[in-house]
Image 1: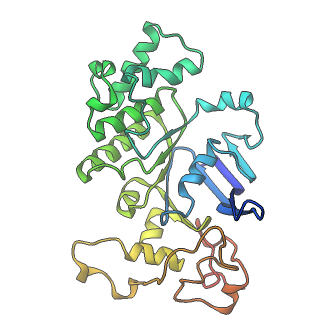
Image 2: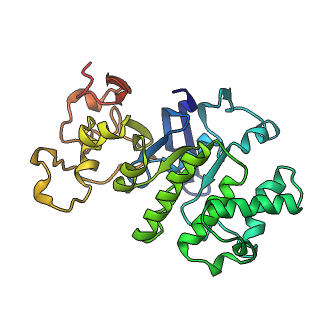
Image 3: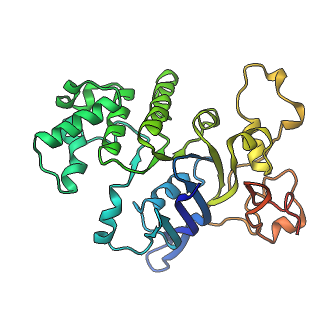
Length: 326
């Protein structure tokens, strides 16, 4: 299966200014720091990690909502890293995003029809009957009635607002959609409805998803493969079943062990992994392996040498000196 989206050495550093007026200094917040990643056509790649690890920033970088500091992005066989705004326009239709907050992402002063129609107008369509028919079809795809087009965001529940956001993302018939924690702000019962809707839409429309989340149970349900991020780095990528049944990186093991189970006594004792402390600051990340300050298996080499993302098993990539001894 070919890669629809790929990142090579992708980096995003945000300048942070501090100090007094006369002694002002600038440091870099390393939100994404050298990520190599491929997303195959037609798959759902789950992206997980603690808050602040760079998941959302990576998703926005891949569709160039924000500009990278370094590295390369390829989309559908074309490098898009340095394209101008005008040159990027031809790719914009094919890449869309669903935001986390279903209310904050919608203009409260616009009707649902205007919200969904706006991307079409930006790309040259006219506000005519044909365009309104596309809006009605987008509403049908997400399970909303045609009469919803004349209502405003505040008249809907959270789940319905997220369906509007999904309709807006799909109205341009994209190939690739970044789902940036699309269910984290919803009730559990509504989460299941939205996840099932996304899966149905993927089968019907042939979509490719990057599904960003912190709930590993949801990621396990929807994803084909899973990538794990820690402090701006991807530390493990593998098929879903390999990640959940045999995680290799100590950080991934800790995340999987923390997933709630109905019968705690059924959890294998050997899988329980504890990590101490909080995630370090991206302003001053640790040297060597960035997880070494919390890792229960830390070795001297971990403190001085950054591990490469290698493939110790087929289709299973891990960045860890314990798995890939030097």
